Length: 546
Image (cartoon, rainbow, N blue to C red; front, side, top):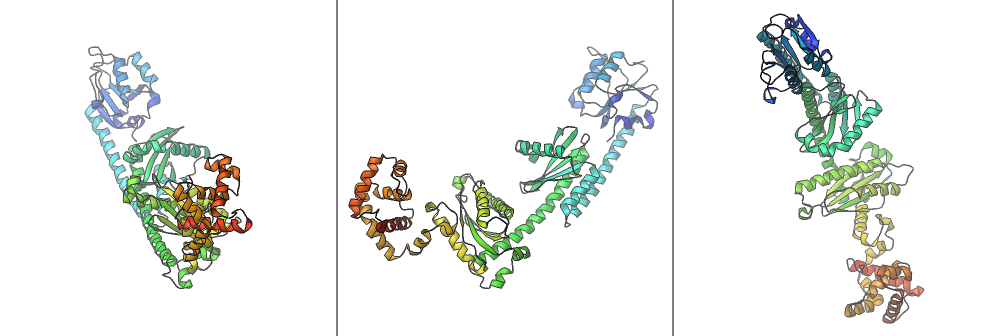
């Protein structure tokens, strides 16, 4: 960066004197401009101009020396260089006071100088310096590209960026732990991350369309550049400068983010390739296209083989996610939503000491979770995973249901765990648990629900009530189901049905009369409850609440 201080060291400025604004010698000089008129606007100013003048037009018409100077300061000029002689014998006191107030350098030439020579000299320096920076940037870009093809591309690119800029670089992945090179002070890093996490949603459009985003934090200049591809942001690259930023910082940050994006894109491709192989293997296993235990274990990682004693199948059912009419999503957006939800699923299982293998079918994500074993039970840890996944938003109107099969050791038993997890989903309306082993009597009922004897059993114990409700529009079957659901508590049953207790007493007596037996007698109660549960299954939801 060329500063006023640098300009004063050049040969054409050796016989000059800084008469005011000496504290502003670090102002950047981007160009030179000869100016003899007092009135000008932004059309001829870009900021950073070194102004050359003889003072000819300082007091023209309604102008004054100070108004001319203030106009330069307002337009963010670098400095004012005045040739003493015909129009100025000395710099007025009021101009010196204003310049000192704003730290705006005023430089005087005591002898005649050629403004053309000065312009050519400074412009040549700026253009050559700019060219050298472009050559350097091109060389660094090639290095970035080469590093993106290496094993440790990400860290190598960030290290090179730090070396070339001498700034602290922070890498902030969307999923993962941020790190900085060199390590920032904890209070600075914490404040920086808080600002980014708090404000990044508001910056999103600006960051995406016109990166990088720049702001001040304490005594630092912060540049934030998104890293990603295919309209997705995977991370943020943050440059922490102890100085003002310049164009080179913007350009090198852009080149570094592009190289990191290429590195991540290649890794994403490899990950997707591995995930497709994983999905194919898991589909072959759960649908019994693999019939050899040794062959089934061939795909499993060494760490899972060493540390896992058992596994179980977990099915995550995402309702409505493939119905664009209700979600206002395209097929690609639905697929993307499923993909990103799968990443969250994998992360959560790994967090709680499981090794997950994942596939999907229509609106279901199927996970074979190897238990790596910890002090906590696997059921307790899976419950923590479920609690997290149920609250992750997948689509605008999607609902998530989860079913968990039993644990097995032989991989060829995976289809059994899959069947059990699917049964849990089928019967979630009748069970509060996501685990197959908690289905209780439902596990037996599902085995006999389509049997002819089951239909006869239901008929023998419930048909009079079913017929009576149909003919009279009553809800006696619902009343009986609620009565058993609340463990024969008349108070709770009446509250759930929104009726007074006397009405409930009347209904229960009516049920006994219609059935022609005491359903509360020990020998009848179990039969009636099983008949009610069986009827619920056969009716695909059966007795529904009011």
